[in-house]
Image (cartoon, rainbow, N blue to C red; front, side, top):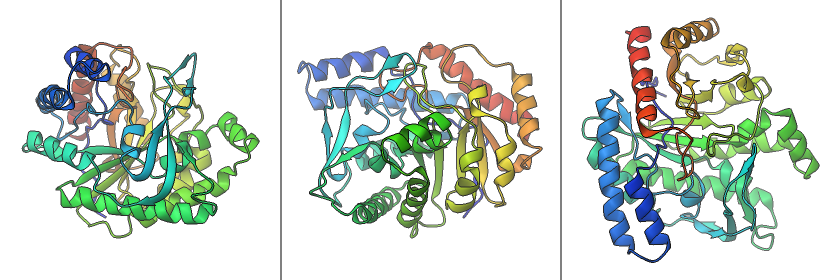
Length: 363
């Protein structure tokens, strides 16, 4: 695997501009067509890509502007998966999302994913920058999806089909020109939290078994990936309207994650005490693995003191060489279309700060 080269990066999602929010609302109400919505989306994506390039980012995303959720929209595009309304949202600290989930209604099968075309448009706009595309990790289909037991009475078969379908989708992204794919995953945030692990156990799940299966599924999905495709993973603790779900340092999962997953870099959240210390980084044994430090919060508009961020990077370098570290915000700015509680100009100042700090630290 090639050494990950981006020192300044971001997780992917960006605050939706007002014009886009209004258009999505109009589409939901039947006031405009899908084609008319796409025109608004295209314009907003072209503008947001240019803004990323203007602040100095070398890898750019479409801000996930065509999605309502960071994961459900994508997962619904897999063969055999449908969106569903559970009647309940996902509970965060003091707030709950709108009702939405997914259901596996037939055996998973390959079909050309609708978001391949979304990536192609992003790549057209990226120009000399790298078009980075973020999708939910395959474990999210199991972790968040409701499975009809008549469809998959054998869970081992379900895991094998997840790996197979994801492998095919990843190949399609590569064939479309994608060379940087990010996998977003909240399950490892749960596995890092004593409270959430206990909830999993209470619900009849085995966290140790799930960790082993999630690693196996992802490695199987990636077994044929080309050498020039960067694959990274963002470990998320929940991000909705600037709130969160899980707390806990990476120590319970670090050895497994850093040692067993065949990817190029991890985006780790380090913007608050909930993330614990840098000590788990001692488990990184591979010289070609990069840790992207999420030291800049995406949850508030207050700008971090650059000297304090640089000091924390230096602290992390006591556990891992500086050349294996990079910097980003801790999460996306809008994991759902509602977005976090900060202004767009504050978002851009944060991204500019990330770029400026990396220039000083890594010259």
